[in-house]
Image (tube, rainbow, N blue to C red; front, side, top):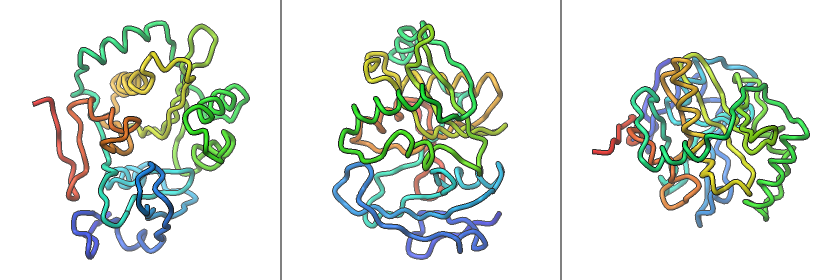
Length: 247
């Protein structure tokens, strides 16, 4: 599909006008705690397929349920889309240590499911990490995770039979999109966010998947900025993906 540059925002590429007409701008307070207005450029879809989803992700869009969105916040470019090519990734010494201290974990692929075990873990995670949030675990699954427009599934991490983390991902033969990751707060010593990305890299390599989309990199916010340590990575800047390596 053709793309063109957005009037007044030449650094951002837009999808073609046939799809663009379904998008609206929605203003809310910043979901990442920055002191400013956030603007979601978003549209709801009933089905769009892997190729169209790939086009959206390649243009820096994200998925929330059946909603596709990008951030169009006035005067702010803090949310920078980041992706990695797993076959080029080489772990750092710190990342290798994280992998070693998680050697007792097992990872299992499962359908996306709003089951009791998952909801209990997500509820514990949300109450610990976001105590002021009004959204429940059920809200996250029903409104954020469950999708009719993507092939969404879970990777469940366990120690013996105990669930300690769940990674929600969209997948295709060419790309993997990290939607959300939650974990047992008592297991924070494991550096679970790093562990999850390392496992997603392994999953991509094992299945010959060329691109792993990691959402937004937001420097200054630790829960988002740690993604920058996975190198080489690519950032969507000025309308094109630019490579950043250790050099």
